Length: 109
Length: 118
Image (cartoon, rainbow over the protein chains, first blue to last red):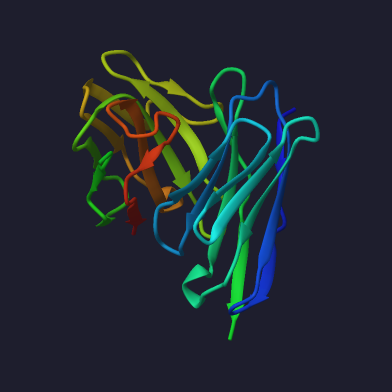
């Protein structure tokens, strides 16, 4: 079966760095997405990786290793507004999106 | 660019009534739209995929006669929850992909519609 694993919850301190991991087992691979979702709101796009390596976009970076079925989202200089759920999703060989359950990130002052 | 408008944001209805949720792509042609349902503290669950001008493809376990999806144009898809019951209360989110989106690999989401059935 297809599976996306990410931690249920993480806690970090304002100003620090946090890494949210995502491992996947899917039938084929056509890209990995990271979305941010604040409570009661729709997800917003953060990053897309289809090739191995690190993609940096401001305070957020996303890494992909296709051979390991692994990705991480790195958040730097954490701000209180970064408290949200972070969703990892993989597009399989049929171009279907397989979603992880999301990681709830709690930022403490 | 690539804005998806979803309406209504909030809806409360009585059990047994039907509710229609609209999803519009404002600045691009959405050849494919997706409808998701999200229960509290859970991840997105894909309900169906709709392509313009054709019947929607429903995920296993989703009743197509209860959740009617229409994608009659390249800018509009609707989800109608028929004979709604309290267990249908959820957060319904649409997303769209198609020509004109900057960054062709991005799904653009609507803001979501929170349905409460009394």
